Length: 150
Length: 109
Image (tube, rainbow over all chains, first blue to last red; front, side):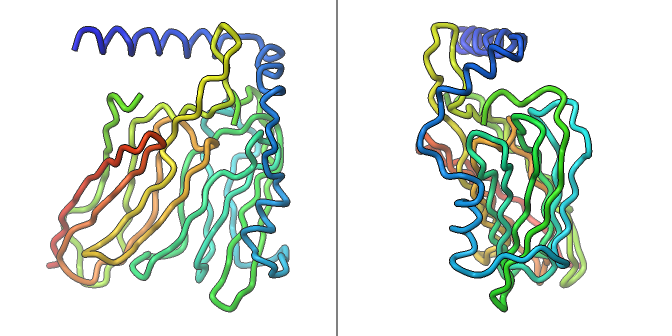
């Protein structure tokens, strides 16, 4: 128990130290991690599966205009009648954020969660409907302090 | 580091038939993104919860895929329809293979 607590303390201290680093250092740290990740458009294309993605009604994305702390940004999506929703943060090292698949007992097709945003960027919610339509909603979020990586 | 992972789930104790209820879930987890480096410049390997499922009496409510962009201590709020008395089963899948579960009963009056 005692040793575990110590590990936690060390881990916590490391986290705090990292959080305190100047932004430039963080940016450098994030840059070389550019593995062959999929781009935001590729995430969207894979999710849409060949269907045309339209910007339009049916999807409501609620995100703050300004997020002081990019490490935890509250995001809500509401897409009545959707079967699946994909959240994409176009400016993150890994643009995919989360995918929600609703089952028969979902009360409605709305979810709220908290995400990391590396910098000021467009956040997108793409919803797939039973009739095959794929609809996108977009919202720009200004980030004051970027979330540490992905 | 699968220490100290603790799911917390809020489900109402009772509901009327076919009522739509709000469920809030939170699981304590560091969600290491795989983007950060330690002080020696080595990348801290990714370690996140990559999937969460919610079922009611065996029927799916929500199946969520999580990427590293989900914040530390993943929080999810959603709604479910309650056709009868029963149990909500929450399951979280960790990158390291661990599976965390929580079960909440609800009575339909």
